[in-house]
Image 1: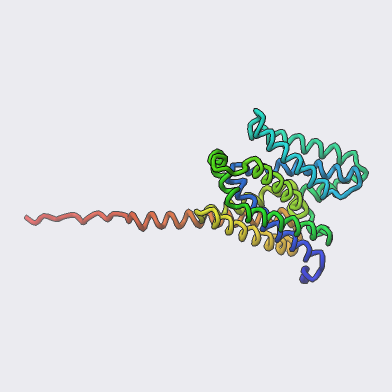
Image 2 (image 1 turned 45 degrees about the horizontal axis):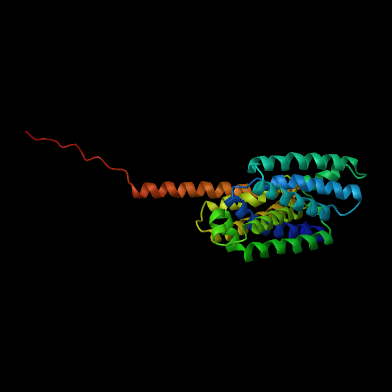
Length: 288
């Protein structure tokens, strides 16, 4: 039976494809800045936003966007102005976000485990038409931002001091990236969940880096891998009755392993072709 004849599967596929494109487009900048785990940290803060929404009987998605954006900006300001190192700031983000989220969700009227699991691990099949509109609109905004500001963001991620000397608004660009990360994490919580969103930001980029060298080509290939993993993940989950978010991440990891193994095999063959094994000359027999 073709499950994609149902509207909820079409909505699930659209949401997954949008995130499959947007997450790697942002993730390449985070990988470049060695902030691959910041998506997890902001995801924990977004859980606090979900708790606020459930407690106040408002849209958890909107409250998660607001709270995670405030948290991301706060951490960026602490990193720039304070004495707190990047890893310690991320730790504060992790622990404070998850603790606040658990407390607020527990205090809300709708504190069932099933409801909480939808946000932690994603629930594509419960995506409403309104959710799809929000995901597409914010996903398009992320893609446009990452494309339009690509030269400036690349300069900041590659060498922040040089970017300052060049006259770029480094602080503004860092805050823009922080807010964009918060938006991406929040819209992705309906697809892969808050605990797995960072994987879609990092894994396609890591896979693309195995076979590309330039920044633009790596970004393009990472988006293709993310798009393919999202589509295949939803299709496989529909047939195998597995969690769409987790299946999508597993597909992306399988692509990474395949590319890494294939690249290693090709490099080994090239080395063997460039340095062929020397053949020892035959023994010389002296005739008396």
